[in-house]
Image (cartoon, rainbow, N blue to C red; front, top):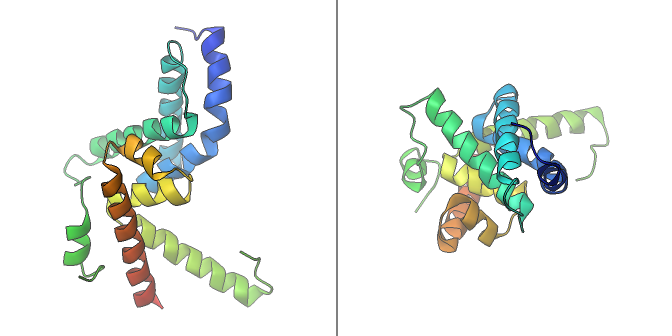
Length: 177
């Protein structure tokens, strides 16, 4: 099946500008660059197919919703026993949550690289619901409303997850230093 000229134009206008954000989200959610590429490719095929019949008002949020859903499907297939719905209780039970400018010299660059790696590891350690909310907000710049639509969660839940993710990162970061 080949895409119509209209779908290709819509795809070029709606999807292509957001491929970097799509890859970043997929990579952070699945933790593997090659898998993220596959997820984004699958998401692009789904988007192109959908664009045959619809025009999208918020293309960035729409594409990231597709990427999120494709990532969740991928993770579920990869590890059917994993808990994709881990949330605040897991952080509390694990003790992780309680009730720039360029570097001027080589040492500062090494410290910045170490801190970047620590931050990526801390984000990767967050439960998926918190991680995806944080990434959609910080990396992709989505509004609370767009995140709520993408994750099919109430705005209050999005706000709560974002606050919990930030608190967990602050706790992890404080313990690491």
